[in-house]
Length: 161
Image 1 (tube, rainbow, N blue to C red):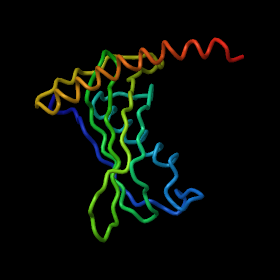
Image 2: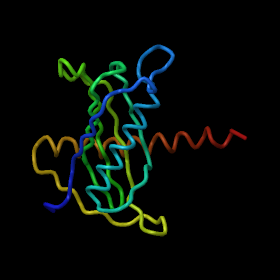
Image 3: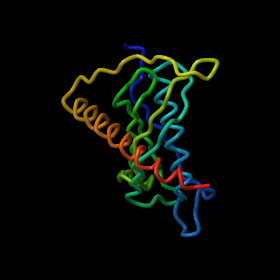
Image 4: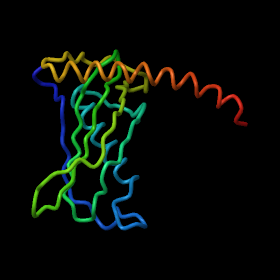
């Protein structure tokens, strides 16, 4: 699988159009960057068009300032039949100092689809290092927790009309 790309990093400057009312980069802009990186990573791994199925556990750790150099790193940490779990880290720094600080972290699940929009198989990712094995186990635990949360949320959906 040497032609598969497991990790990708997008780099750019945070622009004035990304700012919120508080003068920092808007969380919605960060979420867009996360989705772009997740797509680039999943398409690079699968060689197929991919769609976002889930984005969760988003932690905004520190603000991003206009003019910061932003790095959004996406890495495959688990694969299912058609899905890929992508760990995302967003880091930012003053471009004059280049001292990256973690600003945001989350997990995104992408699904590869065929020309008709139906899920299609993706290559299996097999962990090679101890760190990879820990990340894979974490993805599996999170998958089980999401299932429980989904079942619990069904009770709420029944009563919303």
